[in-house]
Image (tube, rainbow, N blue to C red; front, top):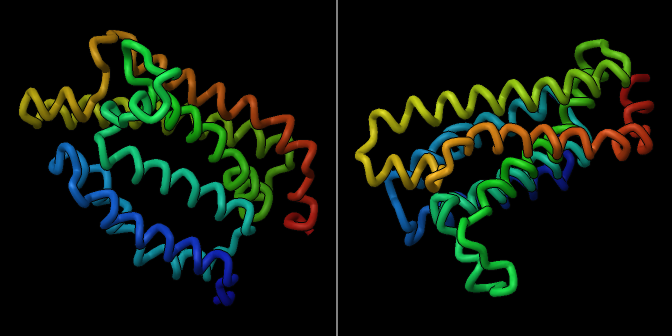
Length: 201
């Protein structure tokens, strides 16, 4: 096992602190625990996984940023994050915060998935980039199916709050498209950075 870099230890602490903060005073507690629960269950295993399969601080920071954004959004069940009250100029008829998180997932997944492809799965950098984009699209599709399946078991008011479609029949497709867009827009940055060269050696 490899000693965990100090920076990554602090990232795990930040996530651990974010879990109770997300659940505290949650707008829809049932939904929030459905969203926060997997993070809470996975956190104890994260330390050992990072020690057995080391990743760069850049990749760890991308994962941490997404998890913290997810915890923040879960506090209001995504669809009710009051950003329009904080930034009235951005107020629209539909709450778009969930769309921001889907876009962020696509963008932030690229660095760790490209690194995993090069470091652990023997992919060339170019193939790792393609793999990372396909990963984002696949996970986005699977999540939308999971989200739909889960709402079948929830009370109608909880289902509407959790699913977050807000009356848009094409919500799932738009969410997946934004995740894919986030991934594609990261490709030039990931390729220009070339940080995987040291990882592959």
